Length: 326
Image (cartoon, rainbow, N blue to C red; front, side, top):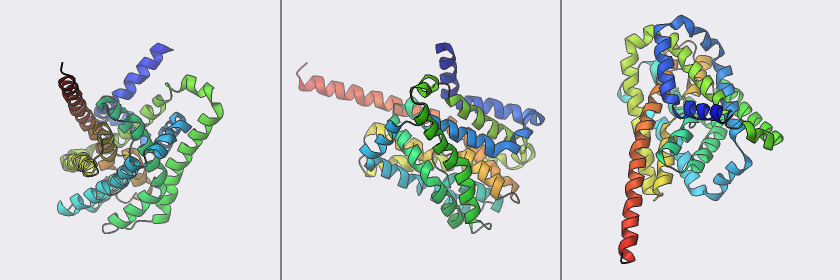
């Protein structure tokens, strides 16, 4: 069992690499993965159910014991990324399909991969989990409302339809997972380390399916979308850190906030684009590319922040030794 847990832990930790591998495979052999888009909502629901299964009552204590950081993080989540997406779409004069896709990514809650990246970065993992929970539970209202507000300049957005979509693929599966975890209790703890595999497989299949069905579009406008996605993600990281600095948030908590803000639930963006903007086929592309890129940038950012944390620790040790006269 320990060997299986170790393998699953490795798969979860290197989900970015796995996504890249399967995206390349889907690009080369699209026929092997194209079928997955027919089940995008199911895969996303499975990923969210897997997330719910990992949430314990104790995790909600992070929300109650550190409201300042949670509030800062969630406000940053639903302002920085949506407004950055809108601004980039306007400044770069993106076509309607791509603009909607970019804005959808920006209006989504934090992704579950952010918790893993925060752990690698040496950030405050419990804060990251708390922010993911809160932003996800707010998503059925915030994501449709912000999309309606910001994307309405490009296409017609049905607020009611989007609320229903987000509720079905996010809120219901997450709450169901939480309830089952609560009911099973200790029995759930025994398999908790295996549960993340559900989310890993689901997210990988969502992205592979989108790539397989958009090979020609990636060849024609993939570089443009990648450039926008990279800028969007970078703004999330930098402005997330900036907001943390303004409110004097500690280093490890600032790391968690920046990662949470910049790493979106892009699988939700893909699902919403497919379900609500079928007449805008390119709308799914930004979410698919964001899923690949934010894992790469998140890993790089995590390495930089971990190195920074070590420098801080060394400086504190030196200061403590100097104060004690050693």
